[in-house]
View 1 (cartoon, helix red, strand yellow):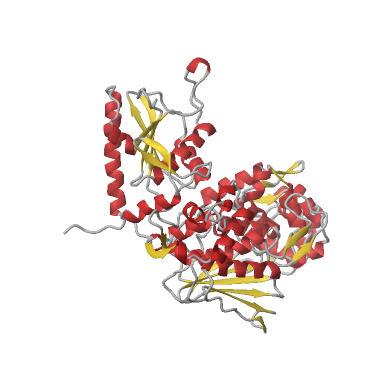
View 2 (cartoon, rainbow, N blue to C red):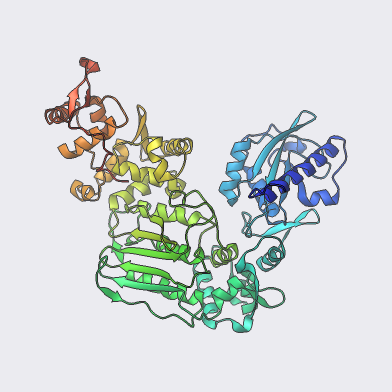
Length: 605
C-alpha cells in the first residue's frame, strides 16, 4: 500500500505538466509547432516591448514592466482554465521561433503577484543555448480577474471571456468542492426584492467599473453577472444565502457605553431578511455610530472630517467575519460597539483555516468558501482576496490608532478588535507628506512609520512580528521606506545597525501639536525625553548592544551632546548605567546593576 501524502495530487499534476512542457520544447527545438491539444495547456509568449523599428529584437530588460503586465493577464487566463497550465516565455507564438527571455525570474514572480495576486512558479530553461522562462500556473480556487477586471480562460488554444456563472458551473463539476458553489433548488422567484435593491446600491456606490448595464438591467442579468445564477435558472448556495430570506439572524449588533458596561442598544432580530439585507442593516447602523471628528491643518492623507474609525477598515472587519466564518455553525457573527472607546469587536464562529494564524493574517491568503468570497468581491464589498486585512492595518495606523487585533479563541472563533477615537493629526500629516504618494498606501511603510513613532529605533529583527514577515523581507521593506521622502528629507535613515525616523519627519509631527498630546498617545516619547523615558531608550539600546555612548543617546533623542551626556550621568548615579572602560571618543556606558534584562516596555508598537 502506497503512503498517502497531503497535496500529492497537486504535485503529480505539476509533474504531468512539466512532462508536457518538455515535449513542447523538444518539438520547438526540432522546428515543429505544438499540437492544438498541447496549446490548450501550454501557451507560447514573446516578451512585450522587445521589438524596435522594423521588428528588430531589442536587448531584454530584466525588469520589463510592459512584459510583466502582459504575462500577468495571461497568468489569470491560465489560472481560470481547468487544470491550469504553463506559459513558455521567449517564443514567437505563431512561428515557434526561439527569441529568448530577458526577465529576471524572482522579479517577474513578485511583479505578477503584485498585479493580479497570483504567485506562479517560474523556471529558467535553455533550449539550443536560448534562455526561456516557464511559468507554471495552478488552477485558481475562485475566478481570477485580469488587469481590466475581466475573467478569461483558454478554449481552443486562445483566451476567451467567461462570466462568473459559467466559471462556477464548471468548477462545481470539477474535483474541487466548495459547499457555497453547489446548486440549490432556489430560483429567481425566491430572491428578496430588498436584497436586489441593496446589491444595486452597493454596486452604484462602490464599483470602479461601469456597471450601468447591471444597475439598469433585469434581476436575472444582475444575478448572472455576480455568478450566482446558473444557466438553468437555479441559484448557487452562495447566491441563495446572500439573496434569499433567512430563517435566522446571521449577524447581531450590540452597543455598550463602556467595556463590560451598560447595554445601550440590544441586538435586533433580523430573521426573515436575506444575509445581504442584514449586512446592510448593520452597516448603516455602524455608519451612524462611527461619528465624524473635525480636524484642521490636515493635508495629504487627512480629511476635513475624519471618522473615529476608518470606514473601510470597520466594514472589512465586519465582512471578514461574515464571509470567512464557519457557516456550518448556527451562531451569528457578533458585533459589539463600545461608545466611550469608539471601538468595535467582531466575533466570528469558526477558527482560522488554511494555515492562517493571528501571526500570519497579513501574509497568508485563504478563503474557506471561495464562491461566497468572490460574490462579496463582485458586489464591491470586500477587497481582493486577503488585501482587506492589509487595508485594515494601514488605515488604522495612518490615523495614529493601534493596529487591529485578530486572534483565535475557544469555540473556535475569531475575534477582531479595532480601537479608534480622535485621530492623531500629527501622524496623519506625516503619512500625508510621504512621497511618492503611492507609498502612503503601502501597509509595510505605514507599519514601519507606526513603529518608529513609538520606538526610538528598530531593526529588521524587531519588526518581524509587526510586519509578519521574515528578516530579509523586513529589510527590503526598510530599504523601500528609506527611499521615501517627506519634504526635503528622507522618511527614515540608518544609524549604525538600526533605523530611525529622520529629524525632518519628526519635525512634521512635532510642529502639528503640543508634545504632551503626543506623549499621552505614546508618540515620540523618546524625543527630548525625561529621565524615565531616557531610561527606556538606554535599556532598549543595551538589550541589543553591548555599549551606549552619549553620541548614541544624542542621535536617538535629539538632545545636544552635552545634554545627552548629562542625562546618562544621572542614570549612572541611579545605578542604571555604569561607565565602561575607555575615555574620550571611546567613552561609553554599559548596563548597571539596576538595569534588568527584562523585556523593554514603554514604547509599545
